[in-house]
Length: 353
Picture (cartoon, rainbow, N blue to C red):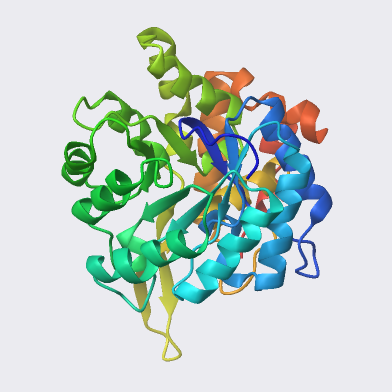
């Protein structure tokens, strides 16, 4: 195990950059991690949902985790995404991450096959804890993606039985009452990390939740500003927290992007449809527009509609207008000019379908 796991502050859920031939772009991945470290993150998460883990082969998955660990080289933490809807696969992946030197492992609730909370605890989390010793694990509760959820009671059993092995939870239920129950049942030692960028401050400010940070999607773009916001809130610096929160607000709403579109049927009839472009499609689109990575995603994820791309571009413009220093660090790290990129219609039209 590499270093001591400190589940607080800002952890970036890394995108996985791909080249034009759909292979993992190792150079871009290393550059992104270096940018994160330079901007002061507490840790990085390779191979989460943001990293398009469902479309990575296990060989690629292991290689991406190992590349993150090598690049970080002990400078920050590495929380490796190792979850699966197959317990044996999760055991194998967690073992591999531990042997490679990961600081901790993030395990998402089992998606699609939909186990009960009891089964999640006994047939998934407890089996992994038993077969892969000496590495902390972080349950990831996200019923909107997984279709099931580890209950607050079963989370408390895991945590209270071994606080060092289960020191934290990534909470993405969107349910504040559920988070308050997590705190009530598990007690003060459990670290509750936000899994929703937009809810981070709400969770940190709620005395019955006492969130301690965020595993962030949008910090791929603005790690310095989001980390500064979290640190300011932890230090009770209300003025700085509010300054950053207001400047970041347009961006923090865009982990997912929902727009209305029109489909024309073969018979000529037009039908209005709501399209929800989910993470990591918006963040990758914005990063590509800013010149940080390519826009390539693996199917079934693809290009957004022109209306959705325009929404992302507009949010970045608002942030840049409110405080040019927020996007500013990208310029030196990726050798681009933010104003030029945001003003270039060709850049953004090329990202739309």
